[in-house]
Image 1 (cartoon, rainbow, N blue to C red):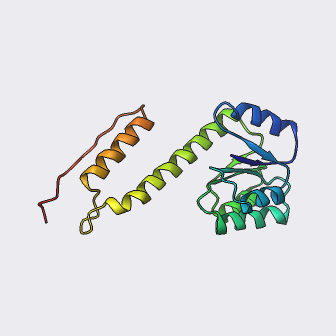
Image 2 (image 1 turned 180 degrees about the vertical axis):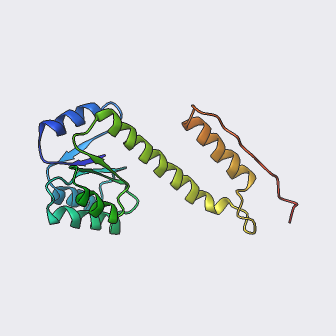
Image 3 (image 1 turned 60 degrees about the vertical axis):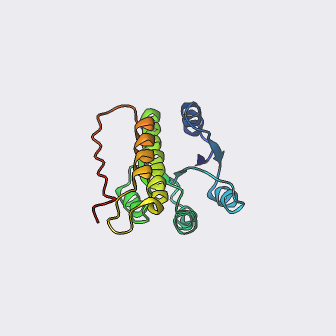
Length: 168
């Protein structure tokens, strides 16, 4: 996780609170974050504090959405509705108002990463679909179902598998 926020007690608190669940790389400014991305460093998510409201921050968001769109961007904002609307118009993955509850932020981050993993699985499974119906082929369905059940052990499941090989 790339965490872009000016040095502050909040950054230290959040970094310590999130460290058991995520590998956090902190930088002080969006310029440093952009440089790391351009150098090819890979991150699963970007956590960005935009409370300064600098134009540079919004340019960074546009750049991430344009060139690194596969990386979810979670934005920390102050409670300004105008700022939240401006950020949502840029199609960030999620926003979190400051002050931040570390537990809530951890859950939001986990949900975003899980959603991102599921989207990758769905996209990679496109090659394993029946060309006429669009349904997953049996091995791909069973593999995906197994992965989803393994990663999400809580909850109830209803799975339906139809063998349509001879249906055409």
